[in-house]
Image (cartoon, rainbow, N blue to C red; front, side, top):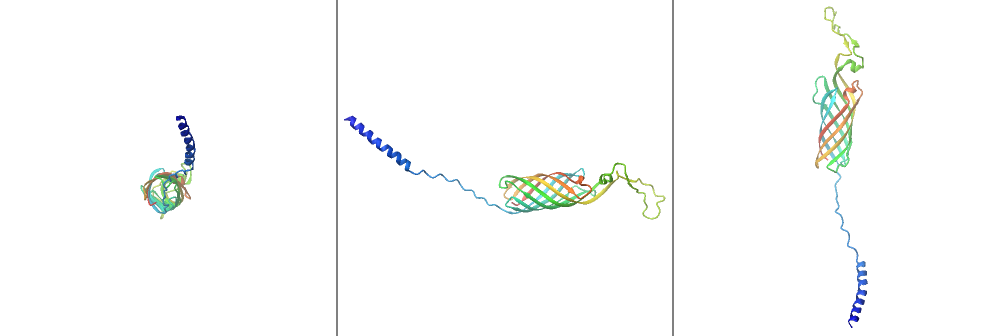
Length: 225
């Protein structure tokens, strides 16, 4: 009798177990939890940045102050202009230049971004040099004579030494410039960034290109996008 009850229980369990498993398989799986959506606005607008550069001009330490600015498209592409002038100059040491500026910024939505920028324009400079360096003359070459009287005879005037390739003069001239640079920007908030970088200044159209071209380090505070 006990055996019959036990066999009947096994028969019931054998029938119910496949049915329960089939029912579990037919139940739909719970939907996967959706990830939160992040939406950011791509902004465009004007930017302006006071800029300071540290370099060498005519083999002398030079500090250039200026500003760059323009329209920043989608926080990435900059079109604008810039201008710089020598702050520690004198009557024989001066330089100023400016021109159009274009630049590109990578990862502008992050705290640290970077990118290239280039300036193309012109300027003018005043430097002290020698005739030999300006005219590419060998040392000791006589360029001219100083013993010339403006009015009448030069008789009785002291004889002055001739002008040679070693004679120092002050020269002013205009030049064409292109300045390429690489920048790293640190975002302080939505409207202010620290801009630091390295540039190379390349000049043409003047007799003293070698004295004007060179590397520079720069730092700026950019306001805007």
